[in-house]
Length: 326
Image 1 (tube, rainbow, N blue to C red):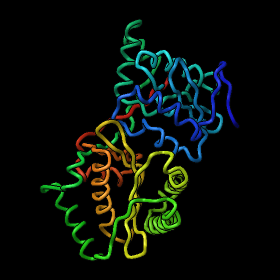
Image 2 (image 1 turned 120 degrees about the horizontal axis):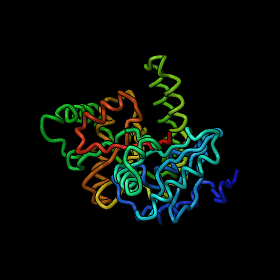
Image 3 (image 1 turned 135 degrees about the horizontal axis):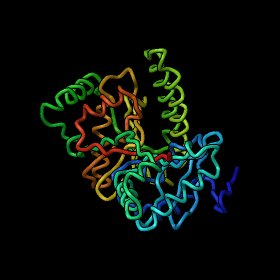
Image 4 (image 1 turned 180 degrees about the horizontal axis):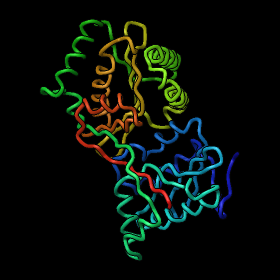
């Protein structure tokens, strides 16, 4: 399916060629949320059907799951154009979907949400807003001060320092390289396969199906990272133990003073490798982008991941919302 036509709008496939269009409209957006980049969406939409259209001079990204359509982000563009476009986007989804209850807009940051509420309040009573729309608080992005992740000072980071020190003592023959997909592609794939096998070995059976669904998306995401690494302006490092890769991580610039981490994988059996590569990558991100903050995204609803991200003492948690219709 190359494109869709809904309400006279031509919805084009969300391919690498959409980068220029999306980044043109992203230039008008100010947010700390990690989802508001082309790379973040293109990489993680590897297996899904993404479509986009220009609506009211805004960039609108839709996701087709089965026969139903949702939006991955609110409309992107000049603030004065967004709210009219948002309402029109609900009409586009309603026209396509079997029920209006399937229509929703995900990953709405607080500034978009507040602007939409203010826009509606100008012409209606607040209780009428609640009659037409439901706003649900979803996940949060974990944002850290870059210097905290690099220096790991104080009692709060005592455990992290110990884990890194034990790792360096146990594995002195380690090295960091700047990621080069032409050189490291096979080793990245092999490491991912080992990581999956080790996770499955210890995972409770009732979590296996959800894990396999997620890891399938992750496998495709890594393939896209390798294929379009330069096109997406990504940066990454690999962690080697002798001649063997035991970790890799990839990130990108996010706004003027921050960067984000798209993915990180380390050998499940080598304790301390995750903490070590995270600190070393924080150094690289600060050096390359001059960033003060590092966003590692959300926890996808996984309790273990939430605990790990909280253990690094976030500087800030930024809430993401979903807007539904009633």
